[in-house]
Length: 173
Image: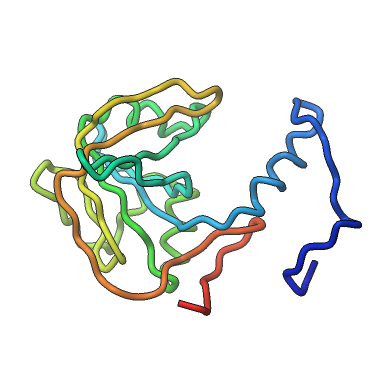
């Protein structure tokens, strides 16, 4: 509903199966997420992928996770990466999110920076988590990649948010 309130008259229940994947995806889209770009260094050079499947896992040890789709042409690079960086995007960085959603080699004009492990990094993000691979788990059509956070870079500002198939930001923060 446009006013953001809950209306019981519009509730639809269903069992998620292949016949209703769009409805399932739309239901998942009701949950607002932050937007990140995950980067790694592959055999052909730097690669990146926009992801909203990022979450904290543990404070001790410091662990985070994200979930790349196995169908992605970039999946093999991330599945084999021993180090990667997760960049939390600012509300003003929708263009970067779009760029890395479409192509993995969208580093033009970003300065060619790398961290101590040779992983490409994107400047001016709200936060960056430099990770070493801790573990991976099979998760249907995705993989769960758990990283041990080795270094953090943090700034301040509003984060880029994704909900209902659209980018935006929270105005309350």
